[in-house]
Image (cartoon, rainbow, N blue to C red; front, side, top):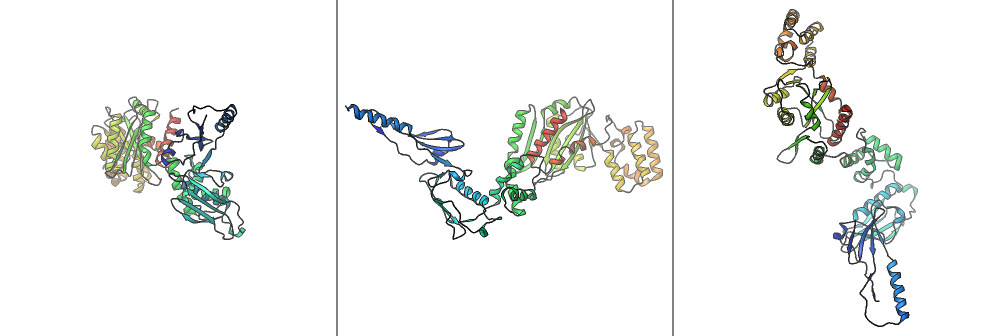
Length: 471
């Protein structure tokens, strides 16, 4: 039997693209302990038909058996490799990995190095202290992205005075990986001050406030998501919650404008709620700011029932008109529908254009706050509250008459808004004891602690809170 030994060939970039199992002419890449291993196997050729003596045949068979048992795997390292794995002949999967590896090594070892040469084919380092012999030299393997270390001296004989606690290798991009674990909890907002203290405590490294802030900004999107992932997030929301309605609007430059979503359970439950919807909005405090719009109702048990959510850049006519258009697409309309709102003119504009058949009424608490800002006497404010809450028109007229006796100017101000919009006895439709927007303001407090989070984490937070509210 004749044996042909296949020589190891460099892995091409095309071969590197698949890690699970690639076989090309006797060489393969397999993953062991989360590392890529290049195995060079020995192939047996077709038998040669010729007479050989028994002794030579036995030697060939033994040699063949030994060759099949022996493999010379070369481990392909990544930037998280241990120091013990690094030696002459070690191979990194790409140049970026070898750069990050030695930068992290410098951070943990409190030393600095300088780049002697860096190109697409080679990478050479030496210690900043010219008297120190620490150095690294690596070359790119031909026709691949792999970099092989051809020279390394691991030991430092630097002076203690050269040790650094605030070194230049600790860039915001590199140390952003150090904070990822702290960003997992959506309820915990990582601050630069906290990150600075953690880096000093865990790694003995002093970093500046602005560098810590930049590192957090780099790491946060990786864990907490960005607007770019919003479409994928809403797709998964619809797939996991049947009958859920979502929509995103963008401008001509593919930039975010509005977003709306209503869970399928809210849409189904709306037909069993009272035909009264309270609308309000709360400002977001994340990097891109914006406004979170919320609409709620009450179920037959007099409990708050969330209907829909929307996110837009600000409270204006266009944003509210868009929100109510999507709300109508999601839940439709109902007979004797009433909207409860504060005195925001943009909300009134949206309801008038999208729900012309509905009746919108004003929260009496907001009207009361306006009276207090006008320095109205407390006696007059109490008369207003009584006039708004009574059930009979006759009693309403008596309280309004008393207001005219105390303060005619306040009476004129109240009449600027028809009593049908704020007085229970004058309302053309049943309000179901809902005279204020307190129910939606209570709902606004749900995402209060999540308003500083990126959009996807905030939506996660709301979903968890709603689940607890329902259960």
